[in-house]
Length: 250
Image (tube, rainbow, N blue to C red; front, top):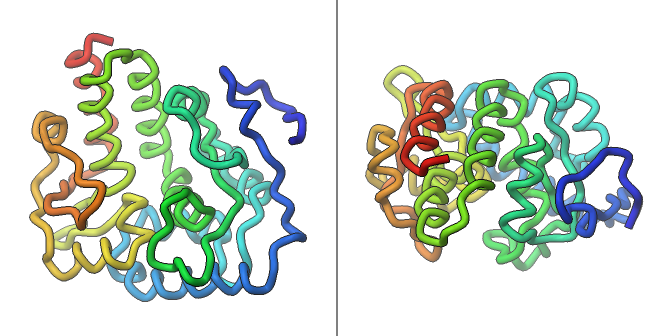
């Protein structure tokens, strides 16, 4: 573990690792390239413009795994977010402590070639390809922090689960309307072929975003999403955090 030059909240420092970039193998770079090119075939047409802008701004490329320090050099001046390499799953409190400080934890591991479609543990493809381009968009970046600040103040399990549905149906599986089209921005649909196809091929119902309906819609973690929600703008979900504060009394 390396000592980190910034002050980390809570116990986050216990999970920090170093991205040993020179230790990635040709197979691992090849896995990134395969996953990247396979998803971009669909995302060129079906990801939202803010995601595609973030890919360009942050210099994402197909041929090599991303260098976390290089992304930070662009991301921090743009939206005051930074990536922090961590060892894997974090406790919920630690995760939201970091997001509340505008720090996004990312793993440095990439899935094995025999697990291209699904990996049960977080990996760098889902974390960086799926999530991070949206962090270059100011309003979404502010939304993510605002959500985390609410999550950190909720202690009872029922409210945590209910609020977690907002994260699931926006950050993980969010859709947005662009004119007459519905585009993807959530990391789960961005990084997954099956979930992306499910949206593009009409396999799920798409409802207009409503905070109350989202909070009442149970999450399906072990099947393709039957219902997703489309926002009209990222301001809509940022403003929803103000209403969420009232609902949860924080």
